[in-house]
Figure 1: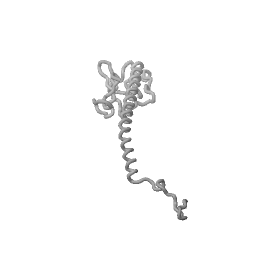
Figure 2 (figure 1 turned 60 degrees about the horizontal axis):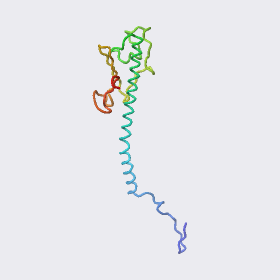
Figure 3 (figure 1 turned 135 degrees about the vertical axis):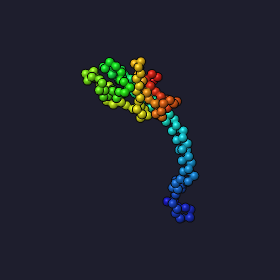
Length: 152
């Protein structure tokens, strides 16, 4: 309490005791929105690049698993068997030939965007492991571009 010159008392509630005005709150909210508008797109771009990087690593690991399957069985998985042949012995493969599972965690992982990998095998003895990118559809640019073991 402070005594004024006339001997009366008054409480010392200055600007600090009043709180924020509506205008000050609006200014703070606008500044926060502007900051979020600048940061969020950059953050999502970084996350997209990390998902593509993780997908490339998964493709390389799956390609290594396909090669180990080939060494044990004497052939690559067929298109019908697909990548499932890496974690469960196909009925067409003899028990003593299959030495799987060939993936680290005994399941076929998904790509960085949560989509299944595609597996193709052609008559020339070449296989292809494909991720369809962020959109999960063939083709696309940037984050939506397809990734495979021939262009990683």
